[in-house]
Length: 316
Image (cartoon, rainbow, N blue to C red; front, side):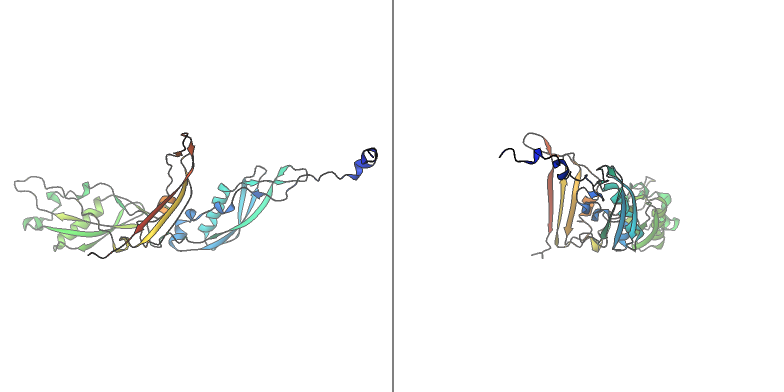
């Protein structure tokens, strides 16, 4: 019985097929392609103009598994969305490379699409940050700042105005909102703001400098008797405009603090119609945190969930 077997058959080596060489005609993505471009990457111009679309792309992937070229094969209709697609995919995508018939890594092609939709948690009217005043020295009114007629007639008053600030922080316009009841003091207030006030620009949802507006003012007070210096005049703190008032709703932001302190997988949603509680202000921030540690004081990743709830009630 033991003598009956293929080992004694001289043709057995030809009957057993050898395994085919390992090959892979196309590159295979490592990880989830959905992470190559996220809502946090939405171009600010497209976001402000509420542009959505789908960008189809074709990648050339080298033997090292990295993208060496990206070509848009289907335009979204927005140059910003198409450019952002290739920029992020080239930077983030990694592959198991294509393999030739002998199993050697080789260059291959990969195609896919990214659908750009404005995330519902991003407010449609919005800056994460308005213009920031750079110091208050410009508001120190000297006796020489007073119009001569106003000084002679001992006229005073408070002026509230709105300033238009350029993306470079320059005051480009001034509109009087509440008059001092004296035209010359109103006009001089805007002149001082236009010539002396300095601001850091507003930032859009992507953290890019953009045009903005700020409300402030000056309180004109006559110089002290006896020739002393006039008291410093501090600008009126800007009042929150109507669209910035807190409104009822909830906001949730979720992210992972990695073992190296970097923020990963940040996402959020909100039902608040306000610019003060926008999840993207956290998600767009390029920051690191002190990582969490386990019971053995080893640095570990942890998911953090921040929930904010606002309720508006009648005063009893």
